[in-house]
Length: 70
Image (cartoon, rainbow, N blue to C red; front, side):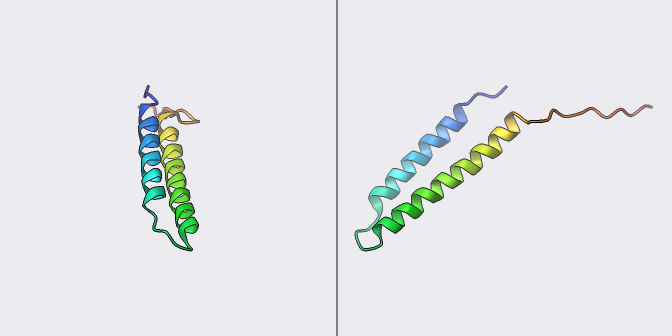
């Protein structure tokens, strides 16, 4: 059984990267667009990683043993 700590660690890293992206965007007319793009990209990447990770840790179907007779 795996713990949920990796998902929390990666979430913290995504939040830190989002805050860096928030404050590092240059001032200008496209500042809102750049911030939105950075935060949406990070959110989508985190969700994709989390779904993939959790589907491997807790599969919906358990592996079946094949009934091969020798």
